[in-house]
Image: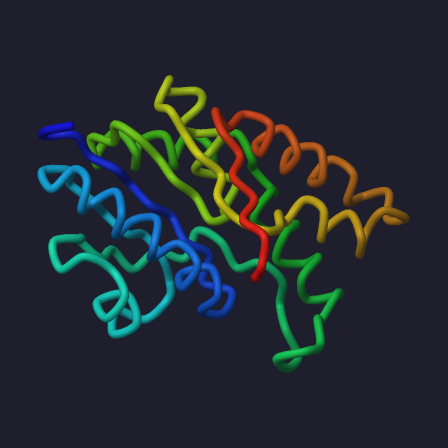
Length: 174
C-alpha cells in the first residue's frame, strides 16, 4: 500500500472517539509504513500526537460536533437541534464542499469515527470508506427528535450518509 493516502475523520465530541480509533490507525501504519495518514478532528493536537503515529498529519477540523452538551452528562437538545439545522440548512452544498476537500487532500481511503458528512462525500467520489464506532449520530438524533417533524429530513440525510459507507465496524466495549 505504497503512496496511498488514508484520511481519518474523528469526532471531537470528547476524546473517546480518538482513543478508540488510535489502535486501528497504529496497526495500519505498522502494517503499511508508507501509508500517508491525515487525521482531521477538533480533538486537540497534543492528544492526537500522543496516541497516533508520528508520521500522521494533524488537520484541525470540526466536521462533527455530536451533540451540544450542558455538562459531561447532560445534552442540550434545543441547542443540538439548532446546530444540526444549521449544518443541514444547505446539505447539498455541504456535501459538495466536503467532496472538494477530500479531492484536495488526494484521499484514497476514508475512515470516520463517526462523522457522516465525509462518508457521503467519499461515496459520491467513489472513495472507499469505513465507518468505525460504537454509535452513530443518526440513532442518537432520532432518540431526541423522532417526534419533531422538522427534524425528519435531517435524520434521513444522516441515515443516507451512514448507509453509504463500504464497511461499518462497531467495536464492542470491553
